[in-house]
Image (tube, rainbow, N blue to C red; front, side, top):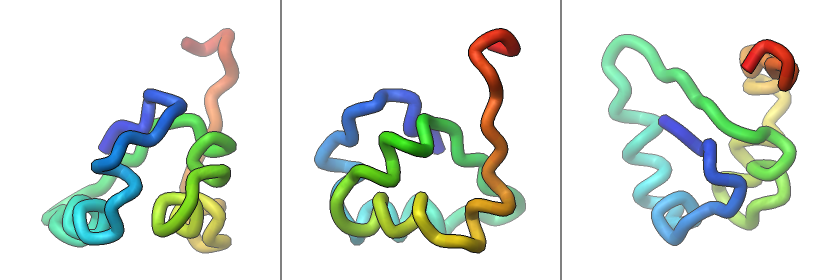
Amino acid sequence: LSFANNHPTSFLESPNRLNVAITRAKHQLIVYGNRSAMQKASGVLGTFASNSYWSTTIETESQEAL
């Protein structure tokens, strides 16, 4: 699930669509994106990115690694 675009689209701001994307993963869910931008988003996306459980599983890569 890519959040690479720093500006959430209506898809990402929709609680139902985001819920389906997250809960339908069968084996693994990889979330990719700018965590600070996700935390600033309203609604479910902001809550998801700010949740302390996810903060232990989300890793930040430096610009040098990219």
